[in-house]
Length: 284
Image 1 (cartoon, one colour):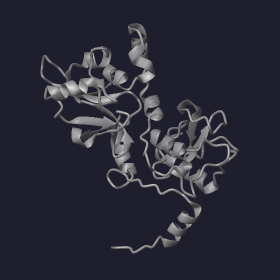
Image 2 (tube, one colour):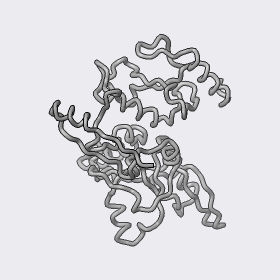
Image 3 (cartoon, one colour):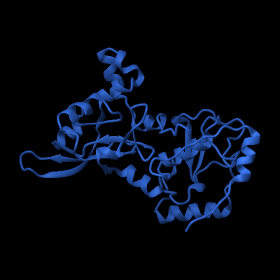
Image 4 (cartoon, one colour):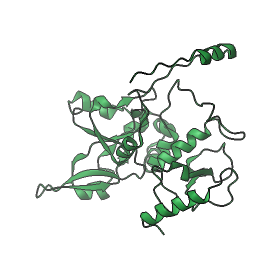
């Protein structure tokens, strides 16, 4: 169905205000839907051509920052679980290791991209005695070439011992939080999402991103609020909405949220719905 819509009045108002024109687009023509985000979190098999390399060298798929790794490791269970220094790595950037794989013709295999923040990756472990292959979750480490590529915490200028410390301390969740995909020319706000006084300019974007980052689950009880995002209240622990550090944020459901909240009042119906969701999910 074709819709004929005129924005003449809006365009006239824009000209009167002297506001600059801003053009933006999403790569696939639409914003990522919750179902796609859930699949991406669990791990999505892609072809290399489906992965975008942004201006900062980091990977994204459909505008979402992702990690990239190979599920077929050809390594044994012990190596993957306990010998992480020799196990396969995951990638955050288009680094020299991946470039070498391209030159050797090994980059045409299928990769998995994910936004999972736990640091545990579903991979295939091979028993080289029997040939049996099992799927396990392994604590893969980040590729060191990636850290060098993106100059992570000054990685390239550190001595060997400090490089190792930075590598071992790499936190997947914090990295994805600190490096969200940014639309270079997308307007930050509409008239309905303008930031409130005393908040970071992108506070409402931060709230939305935190909800997705936590997969719409309450930080306290763990109830999943997918489809009921309004029941997950995000607040800064220190009360300062300009402090948008990951470790300063908390997302709690209508039941667990402290009362009273200075900026949110859950209705009786909202609390009842949250209680029902907790009961349905067998959460006490």
